[in-house]
Length: 388
Ligand SMILES: [Zn+2]
Image 1 (cartoon, rainbow, N blue to C red):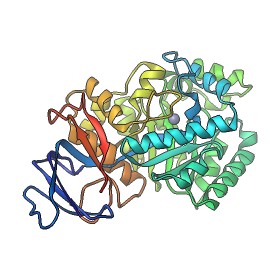
Image 2 (image 1 turned 90 degrees about the vertical axis):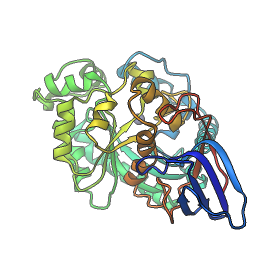
Image 3 (image 1 turned 30 degrees about the vertical axis):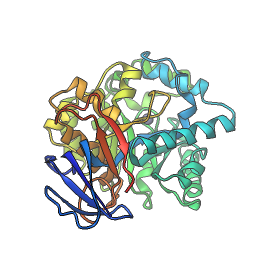
């Protein structure tokens, strides 16, 4: 049994507790939370700064970990996709070692659960033996409607492979510009498939493709020999166009949202009752040199989560660092709000009832926010995972 005391105890539910204390069992269960807890047997361990629950990273691509610093930054999404495609192949050993190191780095950075994208099986081995809980999103990729059935079947085969080795997995569309309507239909008809995720409005060209059937993404698809004729320039942004193609009974994570308008946000919330908005600010800066207008989402009180994306577009995998980037741009967003996004909401999306908040009976992991100086400034803070 351990009793911790800190200046600001962030439970991820409401405001932090000043001079907060938390009692943990030896197997990591929260036993008591409050201000003046009695010490019976164990000594009180005072940790200056703050304490919060283990972080939940809702968007990562472990299998791209070997691409760190290999794809040029600041050139926009189309150039980034081309960079990843051309550099992706590497020796199996190099890929596996990079995945192992990335998983370890996330653990050290206080991350307890990850929603991780897989296009192949290279990350499965590490995810099964990891101390981190993983949900695997098996990504479907294919704009040619003729190939939709085959793509769907190979996705199902990969999902079965993941489940056979003990991973939780679901089939998800990569993005609105890389999945045909036929493929969306197969996905919607699939009964045995919970938890959806999609890369949403990461670049302005995605809206242009749906709005006017023109632009850089159209050119990219045509360079792959794919037709975009069926898109028919419907004068709407991508999100309101494709959202009805997804099963609205299933929780859906919209990843990036860099070019989502206020009206898209409002319409989407009306169309879908279980939406989660995932922000990966470091990757947005790396690829598009721009951040989503996150304060609008906070003001609208919708459910936001945080992700690191992959090491192809980030120089580390740390939820705390993502929070710092958001706060540098939007200082009005409080630590408590960011911790709610980076812990509670992510755990809720992934359906993890043990994680996300410091509430009695949970086993959420504990992070010490060392050097936390002010209640609403994370800059300069370091995370240390606490052994309990
Ligand atoms: Zn991604």
